[in-house]
Amino acid sequence: MTHLLHTMKQSRKILRQALLIPATFLSLATLSPYALAQLYNPVELAGGREINDTLSENDIPTGVGGFARDYSVELFEGDQITIDVISEEFDTLVSLLGDDGTTVSENDDGPDGSTNSLLFARISKSGQYTVRVRSYAGQGTGSFYLKLARLREIED
Image (tube, rainbow, N blue to C red; front, side):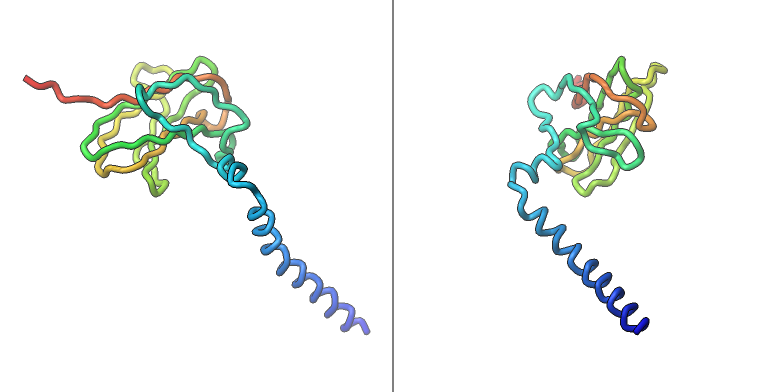
């Protein structure tokens, strides 16, 4: 009798685990396309490539504490760029991510000794890139200014 009860408990446990994964997918499938887009929707950096924005607890959790705000930008092979992130409210950290999610370049503190970030990068492959703004060590949120600029060679 004890063996039968143990077997029934094991069977229920296996059944519960087997139903959990499909139930999770079913829950995601019932979300509207708008709700799914809200899960991850980076801001397009177009035109002047300058933006005043705010990093908040409503942004992307980093998994190591703190939050990140993402911006999408198209860059071209041979581009030489700078990305400036300035904030009076938190210690900025900026990353440039490739279309496969790998980190191309990252900067914490600019050369002026402040806690603002200044990143330089030479683009080796054309494509869609992500500029990620977050706070150093996940400490802080607040307003910031972001500017992406393409550097041009001086022609004689």
